[in-house]
Each structure stands twice: as C-alpha cells, then as structure tokens.
Length: 314
Image (cartoon, rainbow, N blue to C red; front, side, top):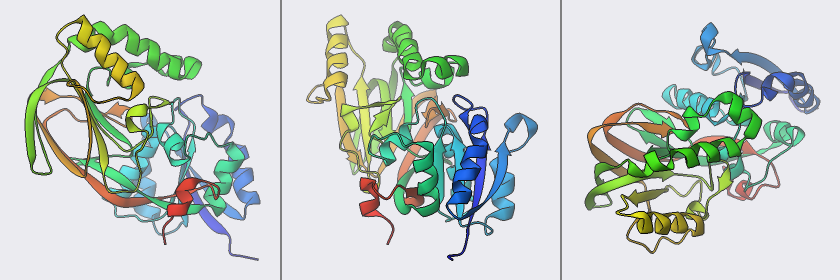
C-alpha cells in the first residue's frame, strides 16, 4: 500500500456560500478515501487565525498545502508561500463567488467536490506564473481604474445570492462614475515608453475575469512567462464609449481606445496614489507599480484530464 499523503487543509469559512463550512466533513471524507491524512486549520482573520502562523511553523510537515475558499484566500496562501520560500504543491477547492483562477486552471470547467479532492490526492502538478507587484503578489489579475472596485465593494451577501450577476449589476451601476474616472499613466515595458489618460488597466494571467470567459484574454497561457496587459484610454464622448463596450464584448482590440499586449515586466507610474485590486481583493495604493512575471513560481495539483496537466512539472 502506498504511503499516505499528508494534506494540510486551510479552510476559510467566510468566503462565498460558506460551502467550506458546510462541506468540510465531506472534503475530509473524500480525501481520506484517497489515502490522505488530513489536518484542518481554520482561516478566521477576526479571531487571529491566519495562514501565516501554520505555514511558517509547519511548512515541512506536509506533502500538499490545500486551501478552500475564494480567489482572495488562494491569493493570501500563495503570497505567504512565496514569501516563506515554500515550494510544496498546492491544492485548491474553490468556494468563492466567481472563482476565476479555478476556471482558468481547469480550462473553463467547474469541477465537482469529488473531482477537486481527487486532484489534491492524485492530480498532476502544474507550475504556473505568479505576478509580483512591488511587494505583493497575484495569481491571475492586478487592475486599476474603472470597475476595479466592483469585486471588493460588492457585499458578500449579494455575491452569495447572485454570484456573477452581483458583480455585473454593480458594474452597470458604476458605469457613469467609472467612465468619468481617468488617471494619467506613464508606462514602460520591453524598451517601450508611453503615457496617456486611461480609465482602466489590467495585467492578467487568466481566461476568466469576474466569473466569465473574456475574449480579451482567451489565448492566455498560464505558464508561458508572460502576462496579458489590457489598457483602455479615456473616451471623449458617448460614441467612443459605445465603441469601447463593443470592443470589450467582441475581443477586437484593433482600436485607438483598447490595447492588449503581452509582456513579462511592466512599470506604471501615476500622478497620485492609485488603488489596485489583486485577484479581486484590495491591494496597496501606490504611485508606481513595478509588475513582474515570476515564471512557474507555484505548482498546483490539477485533475488528470485537465489540458493543463499536459504541461505538468517534470
């Protein structure tokens, strides 16, 4: 009989629909059936139970560090693993409202709880790129400007009830304010410098944004050492606004307002402190953001039938 796999399961009971709490025993049962020994540690920030403590003290005790929660929970776990130089494979049971990263890593599929546990127990490690923005990290997106506050300003209650619809409704409500917003940006990448007034900017490593597949990043590869950069210039009138919305919907970026390109390193400078959202959570406002792609920085266990597994860690 093969050795049992030791799994540390970090469970955030406050994200998404609380399924991390409701399904916790079932997770333990399924993992145990797959020859795993499971240790559960609850993530409850207001009780000062955070992943930093257990990761720092027990990083060498486990074969897999798994987390169940939303993309924000995964962001926190991965950030701490990188900071503490922990290279243990991770497992992810998404229980958030949009779960963009899980969609991307599984090629748009939503895995059942049983499939997720099987991936943790018997899956293939896939090494993917992680972004570093100054001293912070992100798994799939860093963004500023119009609409970026939608994710963290939408209440958990509405996220749980409506899922992506909550984000969409909040985005629609913010359009007049969002399109009125603009910031002057100076950017540099690959020997190119540029500047202009932008309403939105994102550095992404995902095929899914805010819970839906986006045509702007449909060809993104999670392990190619490059990110997709999306920039939207300030519109001048209602006709320009309609053109921008059309381009965003169709994915056609042959336009003066919507620009998409790939890079592994880009620097943004602003005239004043600008807020960022990292994987849907609030990042640190700053006047300069130095963003680098950390190629294949983290390994995540994926289902054996996932296309990502074909590019698994050797």
